[in-house]
Every structure is written in structure tokens, then in C-alpha cells.
Amino acid sequence: MATLYEYYITGDSYNFQPTNSIYGAQTFTPSVSHTILSVKLLLAAPVNNAYTTTVNIYATDANGKPTGSSLASGTLASSTISPLAWYEVSLGAGAALTSGVKYAIVVRISTSNNYLNWRVDHIGATYAGGRFWMSGDSGATWIGLNDPEDVDAMFEDWGSDPAFIPRVMIL
Image 1 (cartoon, rainbow, N blue to C red):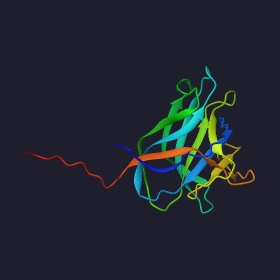
Image 2: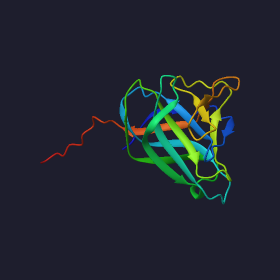
Image 3: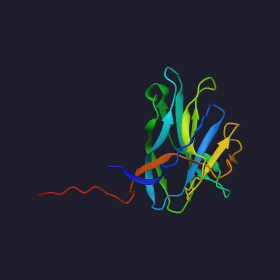
Image 4: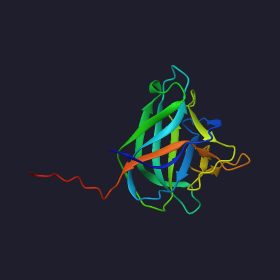
């Protein structure tokens, strides 16, 4: 059974619209080491758009920006996204995350002809473990959004304790 670890779920006030070359990233810092297995994102999309939403987990550099190769990845078909709601993206086997280390949830879609709405808080965002970043060049460079305050995207980090070992009881 998955456990909710990090999250930011209040104050959604604006739509960020990723495309195939405009990426959004919410960084987060786990307070407990665990294996991230899925993320839930507050999303909405127009009906009848055909694209794939890709979500990746990345390490971050010294400035807190996504860097390196994807640690885990998952996709969500646009046909499953319509009204504003929380949508879960499975990350397969997931990735081991270390307490106190910053990571990034990076979101993009497979086309520039349609759009996805990822809800963000741009009016007094308060998530202390990270911030929202945007890339206009497919992740080559990242800028932090301030509008005029820091911005945080709506997210939930779901996973399991890597130290948990199921035991079988023999009677």
C-alpha cells in the first residue's frame, strides 16, 4: 500500500500549460527516505485532445534545478484527463529518494498543438521544500517563476518505505 509523503495541495490559482518544448517542474524535498511510486497532479484538459502527458522524476543541481537523467518516468493519456481533478501517474518501479535531498517532478506533453492545465499557486505559495521551475527549451535551461511571489504546483508524492520487507507468517 502506497503512503503519501510530500505534497502541496492548497491555493491553486492559475494554470501552467506545458507543451512538448515548454516543461514545468515542481521541486520537492522528502522528509523521509522512500521509493517514489507515483505522483498525483491537479490537472485539467479540454475534451478530445490527443496527446500523452509525460512525468519524470529528476535529481536537482546545486541551484535546485532539474538535472541529469530521469530517475523514474510515467505517462498519462489525455483521453483520461478532462475535468479539473487529481490524476495519478504511475512511475513503474519508481526511484529511491533520500531524505533531505531535493528532487523535481517534470511535466510535459507530446505536442505543441494542444494543452494541459497543471494547477499552480502563484499567490503566496508556501511549500518550503521546493519551488516551481519552467523551461522554454525542452529542459536545457530552467527559470524560477515569481509572480510576484514564489510559485508552487499542486502535487502529491506517493511511495513506499524502502526498508519495508513483507514477512510471511507460518503457522
